[in-house]
Image (cartoon, rainbow, N blue to C red; front, side):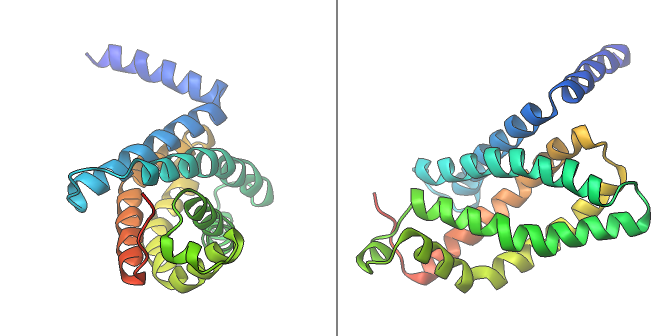
Length: 200
C-alpha cells in the first residue's frame, strides 16, 4: 500500500540524487522515442512508422534535452540566478526560453534532423549540411518557437519554482512527452508544406 509506495519513491529519489545526469539522459531519451512513436501512430495515423525520425528525436532528447539541458537548467541557471524568488525564477525562464532554446537547442535539433533525414530536394540543391539546416530553421523558426513558448513557459516556471534540481529533467521529460508529440507532428506538417520528400 502506501508504505510500499513511500519506500519505492525514497529509492527512486536516492537514485536521482546519486545519478542525476544518468536519470536525465535516460528519461529524456525514452521520452523522445515514445513521444515520436505515439505521434506517428496515433496523431499522424501512419501504418509503418519512420524509425529514422524516431532515432532523431531519441538522440536529440537523450543527448541534448537530457544531458545538455541538465547542465543548463540544473547547474548554469542555478549558479547564475540562485534561489526561488520571483525575480530568480523569471530570469531563469527568460534566459532558457528566449536565448538558450531558440538560439542553441533548436538549431541543434535541425542539424541532427538534417543529418539523419535529408530530403531529396535538399540534397539535389547542392547545399552543405550546415546551410540546409540553418535555412530550414529560419523558415520555420516562428512556428516552432511560438509552439515552444505556449507550452514551455508555464511548464518551466513551475519547474524552476517547485521541482528539486535532481528531478527537474525527469519532470521536463514527463511533460515533454506531450511536447514531443506536438513538435513531431508540427515538423511533419512543415516538411509536407515545404514539399521535401524524405529519402528512404
